[in-house]
Image (cartoon, rainbow, N blue to C red; front, side, top):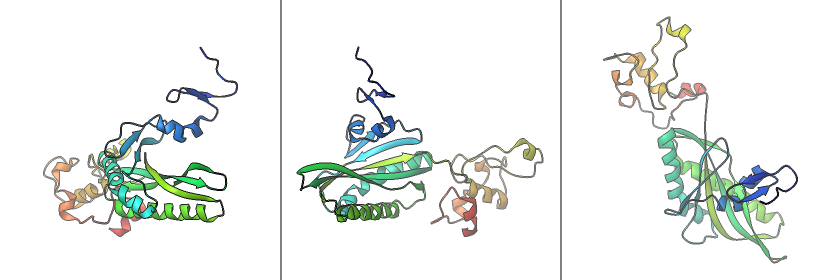
Length: 246
């Protein structure tokens, strides 16, 4: 049995080694490569140990690209596919992307993988994923151009892959059913519809204007909100400060 190295280190089962900075190690290419699933259609799932992370995907093109716009266009379909899948399950998530490319430092005759990333974006089932990807591409373009233009000497050889990170989102929004506090429920002054989707706001409106055909707390007692209102361009769930747009 090998001795554990001195210092505060943690053992990584996936890489079979002790590491001094476990959080940094989890973000390393070496660790991620050891946590990849089999590729299906250029998509691989990454096992993650981050507490708020639901899942990460690595999306790879079937050939090499130097042009970033063309690279992102080639991966747009698979990226939207994995994000849409999570939205269909969860309704609302936070998503960010990491772009990886192989760069050459000709003066020293060496090459390295460099990464660029975006901030988290809150996405719902009604989000325009094409517009979101346009914003992601624009952010990557600015970062990559700035990196190559700041006299670093590094030059892009080709883009490698995109990692899509899907994170938990727990907004203070009107979303799905939350039981009414007993002190309010006893007054029998409100209707709290027991919806199982993220359209609490839509069902709340219907309970106010529609005549129930059964128990007032059941969605089946009302017409579907989409039959009465057009929510196109108005994401669900709603932030309370956005109700003025309705």
